[in-house]
Image (tube, rainbow over all chains, first blue to last red; front, top):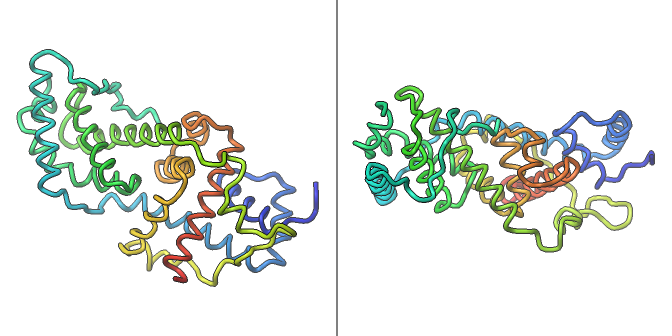
Length: 108
Length: 191
């Protein structure tokens, strides 16, 4: 293990630290680097800031509004009508997957 | 047949009006391409129509969002699989090119700006630019970033979805963050 950390290494370590608990030696190496490097200190503050902002954005944006233009609305409705007819006729609509009982939330 | 599915069949317009705009907003937050976003919402409605387990009313939005989230994850999985990065994964010209060959110092140091949450969180123009930047990422970086950061999918799951190791994932996310920061600096913070 080298005791010297480049800015390139530091940038990578900063990002990795947002994903997982870093090994002790890398935490220390980053600390030392940041002590002497104002550019990387700014980098870290900005990247962490953007990370935090995006998390907030995702959590708070449920109230965000988009216009559903008339044409799109009409297309949605039309497709649904067609699909209903197909289902009622007894043939499953092509290309529509069956959703598992939990609403397909297996990604969590 | 229960009431929920019956109602969507009898009156798809009510469904589309009740949830269409919200689902589209949710999707556009993650998938910037309008056409793709609309397709994903459409697929979600169709899948809902097909499902027999619908519970109705208050649960409608949550349930639909669950289906939609799956569709979005599928979309990114497909993207990551279809398009391989030019030049392979060993090098990212933007990230690696951001540092000097010798000593690896910044070629252009990060500017003097800070992220002001309160000023930015509700700033439409800022998020427009953010999404432009997100759309500019190589597809694998965008997929990893959206799944991990925005959809909050577990790291192991993202690795499986994109067929990469955890070390790969850290590198890809690092590159995504690096590019996003650079892009935001250029187009928003110090234009």
